[in-house]
Image 1 (spheres, rainbow, N blue to C red):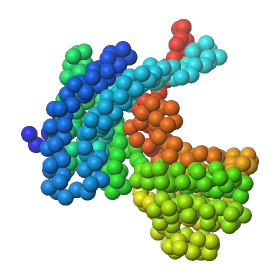
Image 2: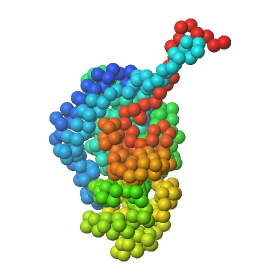
Image 3: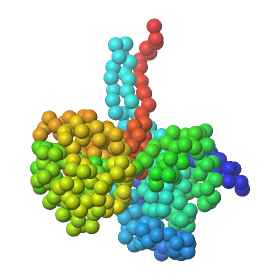
Image 4: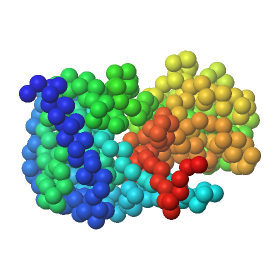
Length: 418
């Protein structure tokens, strides 16, 4: 079958499945998720055999150790996928929730009800655990999903999808509610992006290049997360010991993730007391500092920062540091170089902290806490399909509620419009 025909057929089947999945009872959806979780653990050997084919191909292609690590379905990763599904099953079902009701002067009772988006296509790289995470969240929120993982994980992804399809068939739910594109041909992505008749939303998850390609070529709305250029601003009224703990955690706990701090801004009033000490902490942790002239005056071993450093997402043990003269200068810097992902202020001054909270445009703004908290699980959402840095229709971690929209409903008693 031609790739164009294959993808269109998948889209048509997903659209048909989405109508049935949207009306499934919560108990049935939860049963499917729990059954998939159980089968993941039961079929661990089969999954790892499929995964081994991907790992061998990855080594032959010379992929880095980091990418191979992300690709590996270890015992721990499989257990984590199963546990994630059990956690999603335990979450409240948003579908059918009436979020607001009001009465009109003519007695018409008007409200809004949560409904699924319909068909979601997700295009992602490397990690096969994303296949299960995305499938579980989309299914629980009443959506059908088409998953196009990276070519390096094709055998793993198809094996995982087979388990999900069997669980769906067992409860007489349409197995096409969760489909994995079965080809590694890149033309499949281009065809997916044309299916505006069948797909309601595209979610790309991966490097900035992938996301820009999808955004530039899609006929379908795209939820984007380009990069995480995250800042911590240490205010003149900061508790410096608290600031030290927060900044270290934000940079070094997991430097290769999108919610890690990439630039630290320090008010000049506390720079002399704060910067030399925290710089030594960073040096001990293997962090390379790239600083402005005022930073270098206090930390001579720091490298000189260039314009490119202020807009860089390092995803590594590298940190840009800038001393600012005021809160206004910090706000201006974030507005110019931030990526709408995560921003934090450390301050004991309520009015200054609240100004930062209101004026900074980011999917999560924190006061006196690490940027590392921008995560669905950490924010109490249970799980996430990704973090949106655009505002239509979601902003921040996307969990079950963000995979729905609302429709208007109205109850009348014979009212007619005059």
